[in-house]
Length: 196
Image (tube, rainbow, N blue to C red; front, side, top):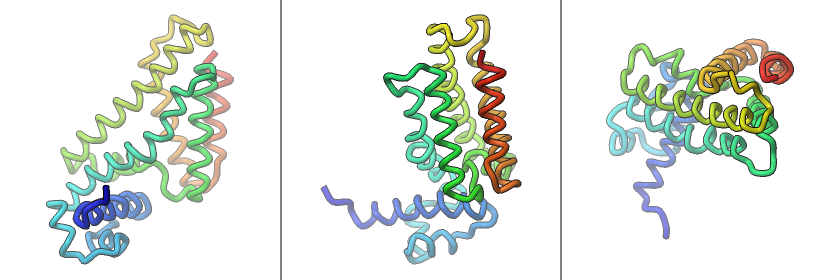
């Protein structure tokens, strides 16, 4: 079934929103920048989104569903031990960041730092993303406990939140340094010191 032209314009705007917000930030991206990137007339923007903020919420959902969500499937990959899956997840994320020359980072973290204080709608979307993300890491850590890879006394949910917070900090440092060193340090400390 072919997509309607209207649906196609909305999808192009969403894709352009993810790319433009990732590259230039929310405040550094105008509606004109987004429509130019999408290759659509500026006037068509408001046929699909009532505001740039509404596009921001939808772009976060798109980013989470497509980019981040695809990577998260690694955490449930059959045939690998839980901690091995977790390591593969962070290794893949490191490769993805390197492919972008450490210029974009994580759209969810970028939007959190830039606009969550000023947009309740975006803050709510970000809160849901980070809660789900932490929960998926916690599930993997819980499986590691069952498999005997991780102490059963550890609170998997609290540890997952800490791991995610530390990862996001490493991503920010990698953007500053334009290199993988902070990400490699994170992976090394996580798997040789914390997850024992």
